[in-house]
Image 1 (cartoon, rainbow, N blue to C red):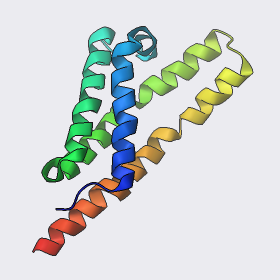
Image 2 (cartoon, rainbow, N blue to C red):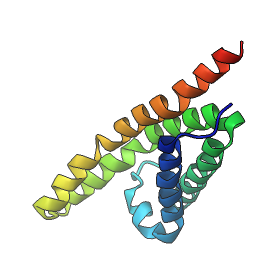
Image 3 (cartoon, rainbow, N blue to C red):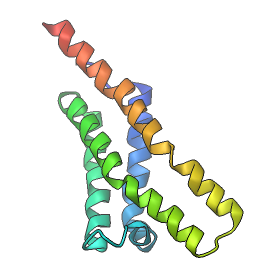
Image 4 (spheres, rainbow, N blue to C red):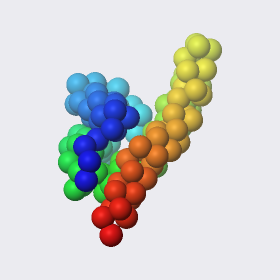
Length: 132
């Protein structure tokens, strides 16, 4: 299987920054966790670790497709945190610009899902099919 594309490397860099941020800005991420999710501090650590493991998986040809699917699942699982951020900001009467940026953030995860699918999963499948 071939090495990662520039897009896959860019995704790996994005998830590296995001994963490390879960540990560096721990309190910020804890506030994002919806109240109905138990053990928010643990969840923040686990999701950060999962992002970093996804990065490793993206860079290893044998695990690239699995890592792509796992990162997609993670993005779906943490989407409620984005909604929580927006809800909290609105309830706190945050500035209009803050609320606007949080609204803009909502479509980023679906776009990342599409990007992962197109730049990681599709090429991995094509390479696997070409072998057979």
